[in-house]
Image 1 (cartoon, rainbow, N blue to C red):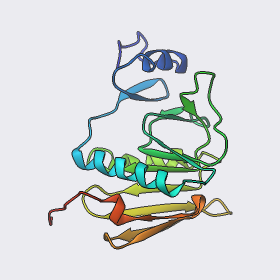
Image 2: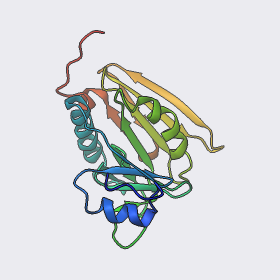
Image 3: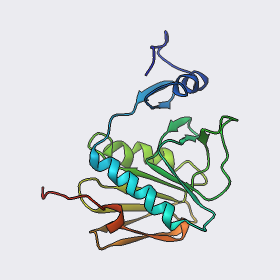
Image 4: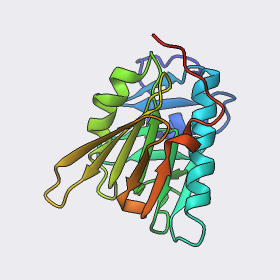
Length: 193
């Protein structure tokens, strides 16, 4: 995470200078840098399957999928984060000329882990909802074939749709395609809990 600041807080400029040179990634919020934890095989595989599936589904579509290497800034609150996957359907608006932090995702997706589930469902989703361009948020289980989609309604409320089981598909309204859970969970086996 870098050396601690004398006052304990980093500026966004200091964060970006450190982050752009770092070998591991950190999120940034209100002066604090938080190193991102390592992931499991399941998390990595689901994330890879998600990006590959969305990329295939979006061929010929103006929308583009990005993996967790592209940082998103939630400008309304100052959170710099790395969603597991994001999709943008408009030309990217960047924070600066480095073009490594963008502001206008249409869809964001997080693969749950034991350590991040409460945050991804709660505070992080609260933060994501402040992004004007965001139309859908996906929460994906790594313990069983299950995906939850929150879709923004015209009145700025959100509607939850849940799909469970490999035989299911989920309509992604904002990017006009259907995501197969069979593809999303390819090469994964689950033990009964």
